[in-house]
Length: 390
Image (cartoon, rainbow, N blue to C red; front, side, top):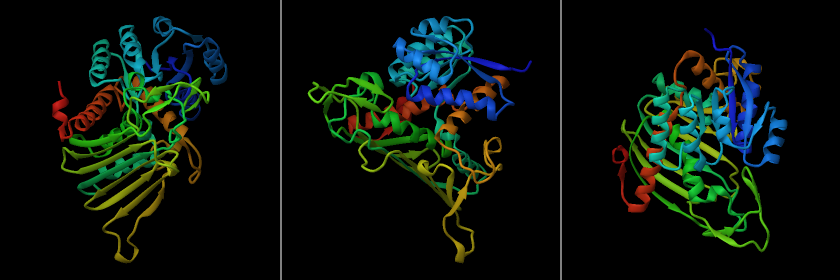
């Protein structure tokens, strides 16, 4: 029997809550052949804030206690985009209640917690997905296709960088993303997690890592209000300790022999959100930059010598993943569309009775690499991923 709809209950209503809400609304309009996500209930601790979000985003009802949301019998899927410290408790309770799961990255504060979440989901037999949305840019999907088809040959190098500058001002308040007990880590878990997942998606599993990190601003004024990546604070506010990294750099050797380098920082002046990677193979290379997310730069070594060079491929034709649902060729899409594609993959997986990709297994594997790098920084040595296994 075909699955017509999926009733969603969402925990979180700010930056990611808005992105997910938009995706749930857009998916049935542009992908009518997939089950329709019904925006049943949105949940947040602040009654006024969550009611405003409910009205603005188009949810049918609101809750202020996630436990009530999980217990509702008119909910099929729990979407978790609250801060990272809330992921584990909500996911495990939701799985025990038989709810399917969609959780933002990083999956949990720790590797151990992420493994508990995966075990709970598998025990309950529910669908589980982790939110690595950048996989779903059509240009990234093209890079994956070129690699899988062998058109880049043997992969030698993966280099990636995610650069931001939104906390470069020392007077910027101490938001939750700068507190280890809530966020788990800083630029590493927030930005670096995306790079790690992209590398696994395109190149393969990690073998060993070595890294270094720095917290440039040790203390910041306590905030009076926070929304997304913005915050307010009084000029004379007391200071609190920053307990996460501001920047993390690491190198890796992949299991297939390729080499990788990674940089994640929130202190790269002029870079609002530069999320980029380059892959070099024996037959060619590709380059991607999120700030030009409709494009993939492609180079093939077998081009005639007089026309060799990187070519700009605009991944907007119907030949590219997901693009037949959108606009005529040449009409670009944006950041929000990656979330819509993510929801489409989730809806299709639920209809087909399979696990979506990426799922909690990918979340755990990403967490293994994150913690291996942290151990490398702490112990000042190379750390193998095998050391992180149970």
